[in-house]
Length: 76
Image (cartoon, rainbow, N blue to C red; front, side, top):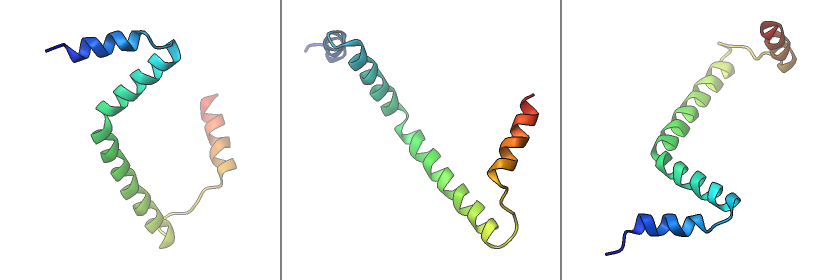
């Protein structure tokens, strides 16, 4: 039985550098798919929590310009 991993690696080496880079990105991404879905679910929950707090008046929105100005002052 041929070694599929080595065979695929050899075929991958024949690709252009851009295509090899894209292939590597796709393979690495596939390793993290379960984690990515967990992160997405956690963010969805966090978004809902923050919106609920805003809707009931527990928190107030801050103007983006105010946020950026504060960030600039901190980074100096």
